[in-house]
Image (cartoon, rainbow over all chains, first blue to last red; front, top):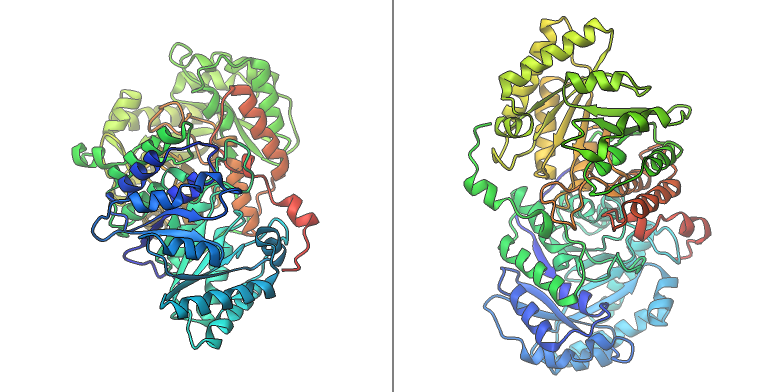
Length: 320
Length: 320
């Protein structure tokens, strides 16, 4: 039962994932330069910043400045992360693309640890977000289920738990006469493996066959691209990823916080398989090198070292 | 059409792959300590050394010494690489497991560059190997087709070329009344992607449905585990891999020479998927840390930094 897409959509999260975790400091100039370079590779959606407490995440204290300075490029939208209404209100003061997004964690212990709210309190927060969005004519674009494949605090997560969380999110949307436009499933702490991807996606597809799905995969344990491949085999055509694998430095002991799957590695795999990404791979590799120069240490992307195959394919002759 | 195995067999190549490429010097003591540690993890086949020209590969000049010093462990065999009759004769003076192995490259330019022999000369060399093995009662155990998924010199490699090379190898075996017991397909320079794995394995399976297959995958461009997964989905149950991803340092500019897929990452993925490996994952992670200490720099394995899930599963309670 394989259903590979002919094209995937990539949500590039490298700038936000990376610059919030790097010890830095990283200058606003460097952030803008990197984000704008990404916006010129063919990527159509680049997550630029997060509007979070600057006391807790000092690397994002210049979020508004970055957002205002970014130049526009045709066909490219800049997105942002916010975790609560206060963050959403900050984001709305900028020119960024700020849709309504709901969020919940499959694991309740993770939810409490991450946001201080249990599942019921999280659902209540989502009601406030929905009401705010309705009041300000902001469309709800997606909902994310975090720790959908396992959790360091709760242990294994069953597909049934994921389905329950989706039902709960759909419930609060229904209260407001809304439907869920897109579901994002996140392997927040790197537990996923291809069979889990197949099982969870399969369970969701069985229940809601037409619900658009997106995967947010961390490559904590090396299975990231295999997981993405398993997702594509189930027809998933939307992925979050990070240029150069930004977003956690697996070489600095951030256990469980390793970066997203690497964008250029994902693009390479897809393009070689005949799945379009719309991305100029060699331009993206240049961005990965730029990211490494900016953060000042090695990043985990592989293709940026192995190189694309374009130089061999254009010059090589198949006289094997 | 998925046909996952219930168990895979791993041929651990880290010591040979790694110690031949590391700038070193690495002491004989360290080599023996690492190889013996691997032999106590549940791995049943560990490639210890290669018998190659010590002028060209100084890191393997102590191959005989290492081979003679290794202690035996029940159920574990130590293997070696040799590239020609001279190497085979050296290997046979040691206690290592030294079966007959045939080799050919799908890409003729690679063959010429790597061994100085074109395809016809390579086939002639295989005839000499077969004759030698028959004369000394050495069983032919396998044949490897290198650059089976692409080549930096020849460019793309078609499944038809791979089938031709297999037929050529089978031809020289038939001349001596022998059959091919096991075929190893190698992504020597990191061109493979999951669709190529599916296509090449599918073409081989169609022609020779009962031929046991093994995959040798380099993770030059990040697709290694996705490729292994695609192979398993086609029923492949034998893999070469390297502890810690030894075998090329992607952080030192060895372009195209990045290491094999990482053994502990592969074991993690399989065990999580319910595919048995027989390996004690936490013991293997200890070996990966030992490898990093011995070579004195970071190695590309992910799980050795992310950690296994055993501590979460044994203590965690699923109250999600």
